[in-house]
Length: 133
Image (cartoon, rainbow, N blue to C red; front, side):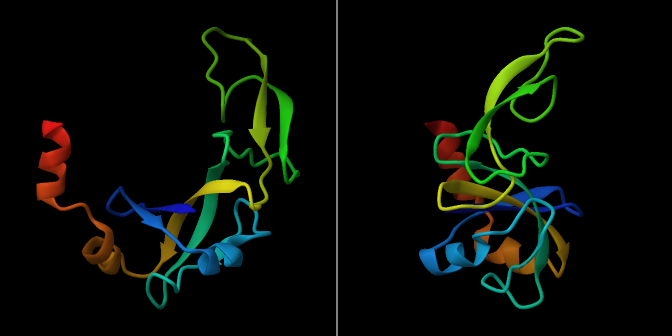
């Protein structure tokens, strides 16, 4: 499972790949729930803001459902209207984290982001290698 931790102060996001032990601690949590990020560092806490499942469907915070479901939406998560009043039926995942959840987005609320910078920041050498490809 991938976890994207965003830091509002610095406007940076850190991508973390977690193992099954940490993944089990997120099962059953919902969007807007507070979570403990002690697996990264002591004292870090955050709020789940979204995510996506294994098929790539985004999590919708207004859908009290564990699996995926087709909903009729106007604008927002999973759909961007090209003209005013446009609506469509799209498949989205519910707001509860399940076994099928592939990625979780978390906003950091308490704690220092210096640990995240040291452990998970991409180095300049890695960035140059990606740009040259």
